[in-house]
Amino acid sequence: MRLTTRGRYAVTALLDLAIQDGDSTNAVSLSDIAKRQSISISYLEQLFSKLRKAGLVTSTRGASGGYHLAKPLADIDVMTIITAVDESVNAMQCGGQGNCQGGAMCLTHDLWCALSMHIEQYLKNISLEQLLQMENVKDVSHRQQLLHESATDKTEKSSKINPNIIFPASEVNPA
Image (cartoon, rainbow, N blue to C red):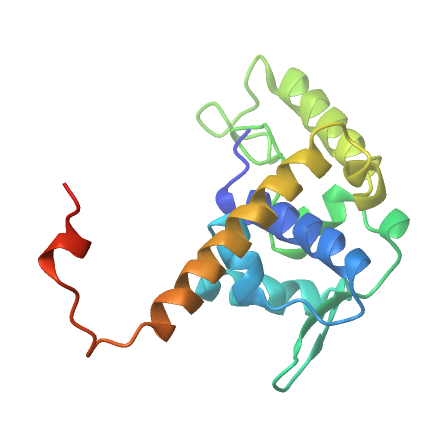
């Protein structure tokens, strides 16, 4: 089984959106999600286009634009997110075709088929609401938010510095 970054990032981004969406009435920007989760904004744009088409998120344009969840947290399961971005959790080498060994079914086909069904069922039974209640999610989210705010503060402070001010050497290197 191979779950690519597309599926992982989609789940991560929607969980981040769920956290931020619950804390505010403002739309959540993809640039903020990108910074907190270290995901390329262009990649997020592709993912969110698919998530919007699947009816999982809604978008708002404009200066205060961004995204909101389109459904209650309890109604969005992990498997639906993964499927929305054209991902699967199929553990079969043949993709379920039964042609894994020279055009015929391999000896372990049923094993991998059953594993795929278990994984899919497991992910269907986990909602964003349940993910939010997991032990480490809030702690990790808080840490990411602090890092994001710290980086934003540093950027704002450096943009306020007047580049024409010249400091004496003793102030620059007070050794």
